Length: 247
Ligand SMILES: Nc1ncnc2c1ncn2[C@@H]1O[C@H](COP(=O)(O)OP(=O)(O)OP(=O)(O)O)[C@@H](O)[C@H]1O
Ligand SMILES: [Mg+2]
Image 1 (cartoon, rainbow, N blue to C red):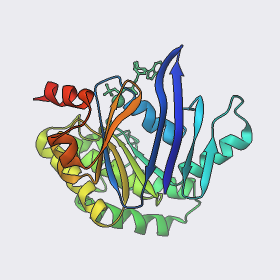
Image 2 (cartoon, rainbow, N blue to C red; image 1 turned 180 degrees about the vertical axis):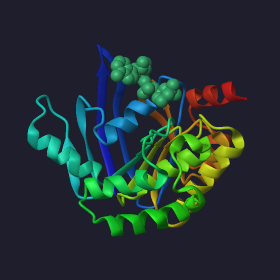
Image 3 (cartoon, rainbow, N blue to C red; image 1 turned 90 degrees about the vertical axis):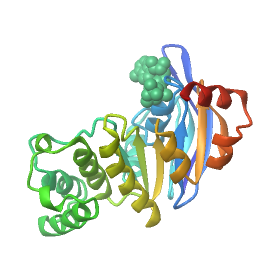
Image 4 (cartoon, rainbow, N blue to C red; image 1 turned 60 degrees about the vertical axis):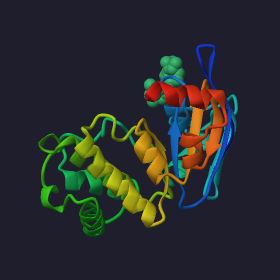
């Protein structure tokens, strides 16, 4: 349901992504691990064209977008279509501070999809229930714990009914206990069949919850496969080195 082919991206002459290809099956939970600066966030951002790759193409559902030199208005429209299938969650939550949690979740479906307020309200309440925030939905983000804010951010992304959720270190700003609240929401979504791609430093989660782990190094996917194999018996020297530095 998601396919990226040969994604290349440079910043000021440095090649950060060196031709990354990836196919994701519906319902998969994939963890992306690798050293700081290897291009994990850049890759995730290229998948929904928040960052324009220099080369390569991305397909999500039936929307395909190829990168080429001149970005045109038609490409922006296509990027918009592509993004409508993709939910993104960042390390820093990024909730609207002057909106309640409920409003945060209702806003995009109303503004982007033109959903009528009553329907948006119903969907938002259901999603907030699902992530365990019904009791605090009238609060402003700064009245919530980090774990609650991140769960609100997940509910907000889900409100657009994405086909795939991308997470960039969703728990690295959180204490272990609050991380667990967020990870358990992701596990529940996995059980429901949501497709999820997670950049994470949480190796325990990557190992226990993923269907597949990708190890990235210097702008390439060096090794990918079953989490138990990657963690217990990695094939590549780079993967072994990385995992050793974590111990
Ligand atoms: N907008 C940008 N302009 C210039 N260089 C950038 C930009 N974004 C990322 N880079 C560079 O690209 C490289 C990869 O960055 P990226 O954020 O993708 O790494 P990462 O694997 O997510 O690292 P981390 O684990 O620390 O989050 C880094 O060297 C970074 O400095
Ligand atoms: Mg990053």
